[in-house]
Image (cartoon, rainbow, N blue to C red):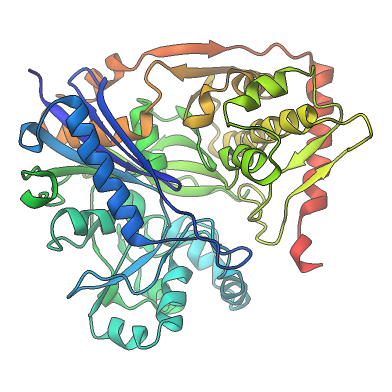
Length: 497
């Protein structure tokens, strides 16, 4: 039997685990959803124990369905929702507060104050990021300032901070490893992209004590071993990457100019730039790309906060569809959106606008508008947000990609993928294996364990499933884009009004 790899894929709304064989095929899958906590408008939290227990249950299910034990694994890989911030006691492993999720907006005022001090240019130069409540640094400070005694405990070295990868590794190794990888560290506003280490000037600016920060390692390295009691036997953890960098790797986008878009809760488009750090003046992020060696690689990223979450809103908030899958059938029942435009800025706008105070809206409603028009306009909003990012990304990098590789839960929606191809005017390619985030984590770990000899093998394994080609006439596309951009301008700064 070939060597198997377990990938843990901890997402925003559910935890998944997949066992892959040597051909990169899933042979056992487990998934458990967990609770979303909304204490106030704009606040989003998770219970850290919910994250851990759902991930552990998914891992055990995947192993059982694959018919193997943890002792038969070659290795474990970890990928995770990024930026989400946890702080726990080193002595007990007890979290001192709920995890503050990447979508959370509570630290917007702290970001405004940071900008007012004139520090954003320094942040851009050192980290490649924009100043935004999306990232981890202000979340750490908020927890330390709002949990009684936390800041003093942190200064004494009694507390540990981690993004979700660090929390999972801590739990998997029985509290012996406090570590992260470069891709996750690059989402904190604290990683210096030149040194690949924590930046002391930014730590001071955000008031984050050095004592809480984990050790940073390359994505392919030894992150410890699972404690035998966790999965029934120990297994080495050899690959870690944030979910979007893992998906870029799982899509076999190893060369500059290759790009992927993941349609999950949010939408995240990454363009590989190789060893070159491209700095964008148009609201894109320079981020660390996962690689198989210790030499740093980079990507340009456009972060769209609401994509699949907009379809969930149609289902859970408006009740106009019963399931997410139904969105395709309902939207296809009309030829177009009938002039309706949905801007799903529920938690502000991400790239390329970076407006923390924008809010969602529906425009163009008439007596003839139906739920089908609203559903179709919601799908169009996902594709149009992606178009906005692609245009500024290609201009910044001086690179044009001929096709966009796609993955994530909403990528199975054929109508959405066709709309995406229409507005981009290029091929949209969905791989045969769409679990690319988990696959990327498996590939990284498997390279560390020698399951795969190198990147050429992974390139050969990648296989297209379906390609969508543009069909919409130019005048129809231009009308769609023009309406969209007018609507986006009108939602900006709404919460400031």
